[in-house]
Amino acid sequence: MSHLETLPLWAAILIALFLLIGSVLTLLGTIGLIYLKSFYDRLHAPTLGTSWGTAGIIIASMLLFSMAGERAILHEFLIGAFVMITTPVTLLLLGRAALHRDRTENSPELPEVAKSGD
Image (cartoon, rainbow, N blue to C red; front, side):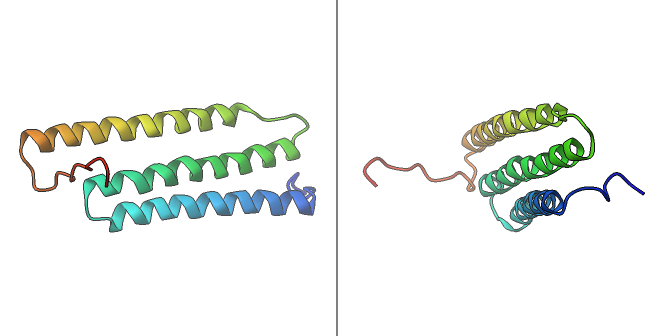
């Protein structure tokens, strides 16, 4: 008999819910990466999907192994913190590098500048 079979039903439902939410958000980020046309549009969908999708999966993992064991499992929190911190920073750096490249090459993909008052 596995220690996971002794998990209470409410905990299994909660864990499955977090796992499902995290998986769906990650899938949506991946679909956004595939279907969006511009590089600048593609930056946002995977970033949100990766950040919040990873958070859902990590919360499910923390709950599962904390409930299955007899102590709180918190080292997954570090993984989530690093993903939540590094993903937006990577987005910013990639976006600025692409913008710099497109400005120096006068690329037609250069996003329009928003005018104040619009």
